[in-house]
Length: 287
Image 1: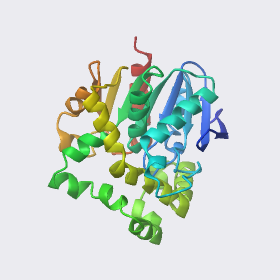
Image 2 (image 1 turned 90 degrees about the horizontal axis):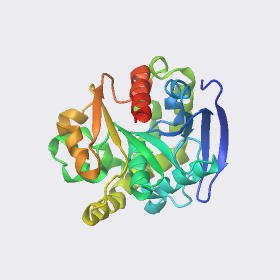
Image 3 (image 1 turned 60 degrees about the vertical axis):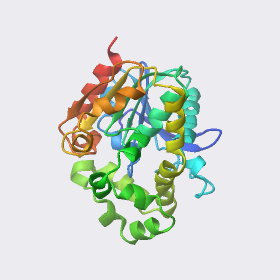
Image 4 (image 1 turned 180 degrees about the horizontal axis):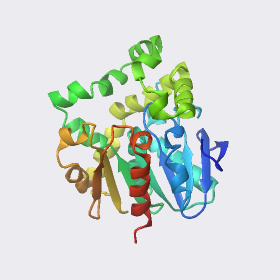
């Protein structure tokens, strides 16, 4: 897994991240979603490393990266805090500017990084997500029925008790689909109480503080300045919930938002890695 990549722990001002990096060429940061770790990219990153210097961290709170000292400090789990980690991490590797892709919860950190640091992000790809504020403001019975976990995970204490009673049954996943080493890394993460609490912090911040950051941007007229490309899984529910996914994103971007659906379930990096890698490569190399 990740042949020719280097694995290390990088100490940053606010967090210590487990990071896998490799390849050569323009810098590209890949951010995973919940409940995965950076190893979810193990089939995509080597393809992209043929043209890019690829950096794949475990986000703060996830995997084997450090966890916020105070699990009830929502700011420490916010996308804004994780965006600071992204900037510091890429500076550590000598990159002032870089392209960025995020999946699921990682897309929210990617969005916040590009919004807060517009001069740093060259291009932005967001996978299977709409802005947090859009999701909450558009919430209806269909959303609540399908994405009930957003609100359950934001509650204190109870979600940890439910998940840790049987993490494998709760989260599912399979060796065949995920790959043996990726599945093993995922299993380690979901069976660790501190990691489960750290992952849930992402949802708690998503209700407590992240929407206010989005709302402030919208009120001030701030928009994403870089080219933005959106991908969604055709066998997941983003399109059925929102219809025209690109239209949801367009008010948040200065330039015309592009995008496409991918014939995959939600975890597209594991289920459709070649198609996803091709799409990302074409977008990030396009003039």
